[in-house]
Length: 482
Image (cartoon, rainbow, N blue to C red; front, side):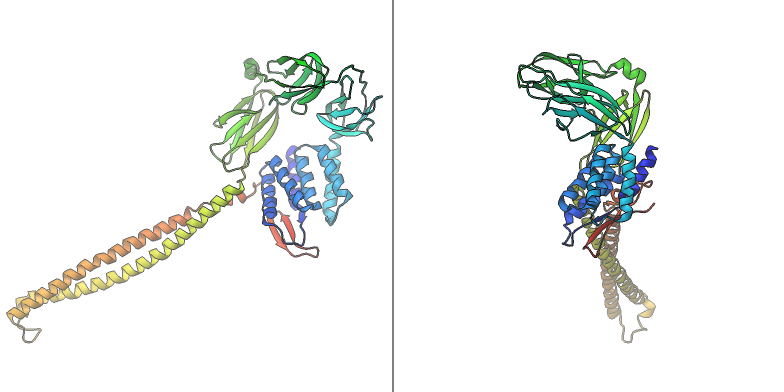
């Protein structure tokens, strides 16, 4: 089911069209759009969302919002996705009818993942926080969309004791929540919790106030309070703090894995990496260069993979006991890395073509010069042989006498030696030309390339970005093939 949804989202994303203004398209916007598309195909959805949001900020085009909605769906953020879809449907612009139809289908799937919470309170001006997100002050305009599952509703107001109500939200359901905030003589304080552990329940004096990482800042009644961090398989981390009126207190808690729990229920996470020397961080803790499978406790974890010159890849996993998971990590080069590779590629090609041209010229000269010197050597060798034969002294050349023949022999031998010594230049030209040609060929063959980064995974769409004129100006379109 999950892979089907991912493929369906890929089809929606890469079949979409991003229409830009009739003005010249800024190169950085086009490059950012390309990058966002590649990041999505590589599974780096958080970075893809950031890039698409920057494209939207630069263009304001409805078509980019379509892509943002698809990425939000893939990130399992149904509330954000539905809000983006509402924004598109309110002002669809020139979005194609098939895109609007696909958007309606996407919205229908997201509605299966949310419910409503209707918060009521006898006190006006209560700041309502649901799942770590402030949704407004009472009286609220209406029910609030929330992801399904366990939901904690918190309320805080001046000179009121913070209130918490936990409820269960089912798909397409509406839950009524009543916040009764008791009066206080003093103003509440605030705790800023510092922890990297996700999925841990936060308690204040045994009252649950939220779950990390959604809740890291919460109101607390003044006085001596015990703040605790609890999660199965981890030691409970707690700290006793003094909360003053209207004060802010920072509390750092770090729960530690229980070795026995890891051995009995630990899950295995393997990483299929497209690069080497990748540094992995788990729940905020740097583990160093990835070398082998990771052993993690069941529950949610945030893994970050980093490699110099590439965008980091973050993966959120929710593991079951004794689970075995393989993550496919594909890295997208940064703009600086791409520029460096392109520059080195140009240098390799320049050296390669230059080497081949100079090498070919050297070989041609060497062959021609060698043929010439060999012919000269053969000529003078025959001449020397003629004069060296006493029987030829009185014939062949009229008037040849002993002295004249000896002079002819010496001259022939001198010219032969000269021809043979000059032949070395031809051999050197052949050697140098051959070396230059081989070096040029090697330079071309070893030129760095970005091809492996520009290709989409085989089980996804292959994006192509192109520009062409249209009635409403230049259009950037992303198409795909299976």
